[in-house]
Structures are given as structure tokens and as C-alpha cells.
Amino acid sequence: MTPYDKARLLPIWRGPVDPQPLGGGITNVNFVVQDGDRKAVVRIGDDIPVHQILRINELAASRAAQAAGVSPAVLYHAPGVLVIDFVEGRTLTPEDVRAPGMLERVLPLVARAHREVPRHLRGPALMFWVFHVIRDYAARLEGDASPHAGRLPALLQDAARLEAAVGPVEIVFGHNDLLAANLIDDGRRLWLIDWDYAGFNSPLFDLGGLAANNGLSEAQEGAMLAAYFDRAPDAALWRRYRAMKAAAALRETLWSMVSEIHSDLAFDFSDYSLKNLATFRAAFADFEQG
Image (cartoon, rainbow, N blue to C red; front, side, top):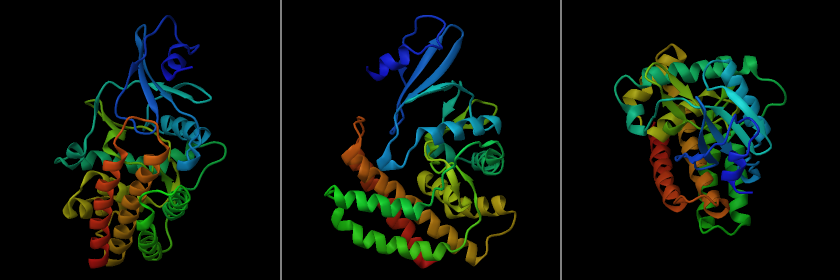
């Protein structure tokens, strides 16, 4: 059965529907469905072991995020299918995130997710430790004879330095995929969507990912750290943050390199890998100089 037919034939619809492709996703196949006066998003995707994605974890995190008031309602689920309420709004871009005033809206949403989502989480939960993910991706790339395999020894050495610099961490429940496309502005408030990679983590990973994925300036990063931790960042915090920011960029790079081999989605992962590799190298240089 095609993804379209899976979405079309779900038992929750009140009448015939014609799912329309929803662009932007690079992990799942997504559709928007008009069902009478109700609109919903259908996410089609099974577990993805190469990316450590377990749909039972995504479902639990999505429900908890709904209860915490940071994410749309879960309307239905079945193996390989998640249906959530459609939010009428604008999907953000990196330019939007960098725009004056937007970070002051994004950061409270992220902090609220960190604090509130774990209060509503039920059942088994995952730990998302970026350095484990990096090592796992590197082993996968080497085993699959990736064209990037020659880069891996140096990248793993860099990752080891970053992990040592991060040191002991505070633990929150992280979203762990703070791309601009996972933020929606409905004109009144922001929503945080797509909980594929959710898990307990250091808050520095989400903050570093937010900066690396959206090209925040150093001034914006300083304001972000001060607002999140309610104090001016000292040299030690800056160093741990820069290490985690570089690790977030490296994880996104290796994610894309693995996707070059394993994803069937129509997306230029090769170009995405190179762009993220450049982001990582810039972030690592900042870490070394900091």
C-alpha cells in the first residue's frame, strides 16, 4: 500500500478524503487531510533503526508535548502512522529565527518543553546522547563503505575532544531537532512539532542545535544563554556550549551522510551533508578559539 493510500484509508475520517503532500519533511512522508471542517497532518513512517528512531517514543513524546501545551494534539496513531491536528500558520525559516524579536519567542517555548514535557511523559523513555549517536553513525558509515568514510577518523577525534569539554551535564527532556521547519507561528503563538528524536539530554544540545541550524550570531547566542540560565554566561559555560553546538552540527552532518545511503526520499542529501560539514567546521573552529 502506498503512503497516500495509507493516509486515505485511515478509519478516523468521517468521509472520503484526498490527502495532499505536505512538503518540508526529510524523515517521513507527510500529508495534510481536509476531513469535513477538520484539518489534520498525517505522518507516515516506520521505525528507522539507522537513525535510532522508534515510533513508540515519538508517540509518547508527542502526547506529552500536547499535554504540556507546546505541540498540536495527537488525533490518531497506528503502526507507522501518526495523525496530529493541523496548525494554521507559517513554518519558520532560519531567517525568521534570526529576525529581531523571534528568538525571544522561541526560547521560552524550548524552555517550557524542557521543563513541562517530562511531567506528562509515560512509559519507557530514551536518552539522546549526541556523542553516542555520532559514534553509531560513524560505525554505520564505515560498515556501509560510505564515500565519506575517509573523513571519519578525524571527525571522531574532534568528537572525543568535544565530549570531554562538555563534561557533566544537567538533564532535561530535549526535542533534539531544532530546525526552523519544526517551529510554526500561528500569528498568536509558536508551536514545536516533530518529536522523532526526543529524549533526555543536556539543554545545551537544543540550544547549540538552535544556533547551528539557524545561523545565530554570537550576540544572539549570548542573549540566549543569559535568558535560558538566568545569568550572564561565564567562560566555562561558553566553552561547554560551544562544544555542544559543534557536536550538534556534527550529528546533523553524519545524519545526512547516513541518509545519502539509506533514505528513499527525494532530497539532495549530498548537498545537505556538505553544507552541514561546513557548519560543523566553523563551529569547531569557534570552540577551539573560545
